[in-house]
Length: 329
Ligand code: XIL
Image 1 (cartoon, rainbow, N blue to C red):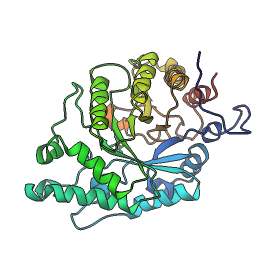
Image 2 (cartoon, rainbow, N blue to C red):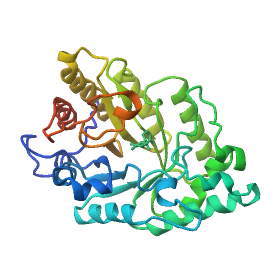
Image 3 (cartoon, helix red, strand yellow):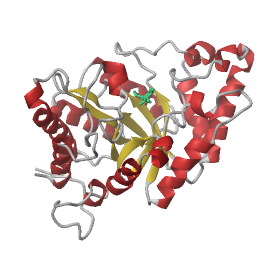
């Protein structure tokens, strides 16, 4: 069998006490919130010790960063980018075009001015971080679970070509940054992942500057996709010549019997990642947060413990599942 495990960093030796970022040359990342860097020392330390890449969890989204038509709020995003630089971490920008967390003013933009507003937003944001943000989620969640184009303000005002337009604008603003299409529920095989594949293949055929696909990988341990299906999906996308990254991984466990939860979670993390690594070189794996004390899951799906570190920043079994996948055991 042709094994393509992540190449170890020279001299890393056995896993031992090593951090995740030291185990592999592949970027291992986490979604991060700038406010926590100052308010929570353990958070900041864990982030920089374990991860080699940061995705701003909210700071670069349209609403938070461009709250008024004529006002940008750069400071939180700037702080994250600076933190990444100081700790030798990459930054994956997120997300230029998404139907959630939009500012109210955008719906009031006159339809004939919408294209110009859209272009200006993308140009300004990508341009500001040119050379400092090495990859971007350009379009996020444009497809429904049935695989159709989601009915968003972007589709309504600009038509289906808005996706290609977004990539072209971002590419013009920073020709060196890697541009991704990112979505959820397209992790294994099925209708949605077929649709994602068809969408990105179409973009490539049209000469659109797209470089990769992000699979969010928000999983429920009670009904995870088959690891082999995830690996096949990753391989199929990668065969198009695109980079593939796991962009927002977390694993919910509230539906698992309490005493088995952490062990089952460890296995889900390990099996999915190991299956992918065995067949394809991923462009990165990022988790959607650091500690169970602060995860979006609690609000969206109910109390849970989906991440790699517990509330005291201790490494959970899930952490060791990821580590096992990285070192190939
Ligand atoms: C979530 C953030 O984690 C929350 O803090 C915020 O309130 C809502 O958005 N898919 C995405 C992410 O692409 O941007 C979402 O992040 C989680 C789902």
